[in-house]
Length: 222
Ligand code: B1M
Image (cartoon, rainbow, N blue to C red; front, side):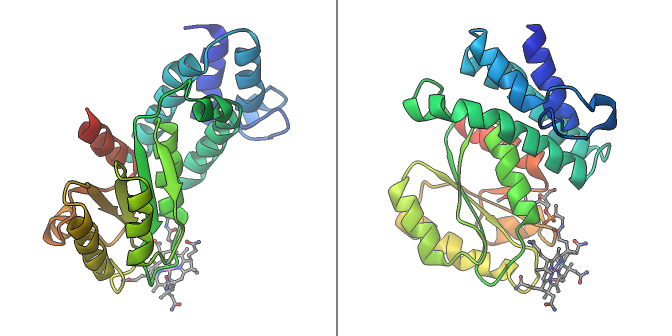
């Protein structure tokens, strides 16, 4: 692999955001994902190669390590931040259509629920895996999901819930989505959920964690 791409991979894997960042200690004083991505673009490496050879594989590795309990939420957040720093340089190329996304993912925490840490992690990781993410935030009403889907008819919808009292709110959201657009796929996730619960409310997928969600999303568009 190109040495600059290797550096970007390493920065995302270990959460080195930029030169000023003190974490991780062994990379203190070194450039981060921010500087290396700019350097890569300046040296003529294409945005697609940065995305497909460095960012996506690095985030895959991070997601895998999280699933295996080798790293925890703080490390994954720093990796996501490093990835975001790199993405800032790539966004203009996405907007111009030079780099293609795998699809659009509409994501939100179900109405009644204000928890967003897990949802944000899923959003960042899915974006890092090459998807366009439309994050509707927390306490998202059924109408908002439906309205956003009308604007992005080919999108996949993701709903998060952290409370046993709000996970039941996912069912009417899914029902409304399916009534409007039966072909739309919906994935749900959040600590109190299970595959069994997801199936019982009509969801197409269940994401135990970001990595499982990405694998499911990729399988839908494969
Ligand atoms: Co709340 N809270 N909270 N809380 N809170 C829990 C969830 C709770 C388990 C704590 C406890 O009692 N032990 C409990 C729920 C009990 C239950 O339902 N059985 C609880 C409660 C009761 C409450 C309040 C009702 C408390 C009160 O006011 N009396 C209240 C409710 C407010 C509301 O939502 N209406 C409340 C409020 C809050 C804060 C605002 C203070 C804060 C949220 C801040 C924020 O999110 N910005 C908060 C927090 C931080 C927590 C805990 C401590 C941590 C949650 C978290 O962020 N986990 C939590 C206890 C705990 O989990 N230890 C708790 C880390 C996060 C990375 O994990 O969200 O599970 P998680 O996400 C994972 C996976 O689930 C998955 O991927 C992520 C990464 O692996 N995932 C998805 C998540 N969404 C996904 C979507 C997908 C796919 C995968 O596809 C779409």
